[in-house]
Length: 138
Image (tube, rainbow, N blue to C red):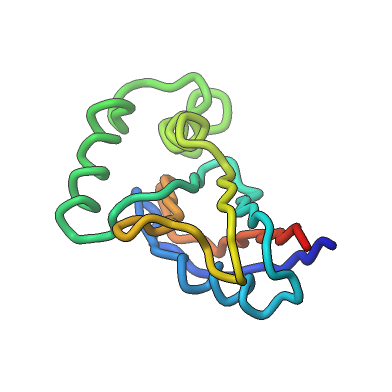
């Protein structure tokens, strides 16, 4: 069986990191599926999905690392072509990835003790975002 649901949220942009674990868990809990996998996917080209220990120090560290790896203040051909100034956001999102798959048992995500699912919005302005959660199993 497959159940598909969505999470809608507003982001601040600028490498905004949002813990969506509880929302994904609720979708799994509310499904009629006991064991399987939950795929979390963002249909946006300047957003990524991953897991971290969601605490202020690590959130700040992750934001700093992205600035070092893919700085905002260098020329991007995307910006030259489109003029929207978010070429760095597209590169960051492509490196992080747009999806994550998490197994679950007895309708409970099998995340580690210090592991949360996060959405990272790299864009240069606030946005409305949609996360698609597809639950598959038996």
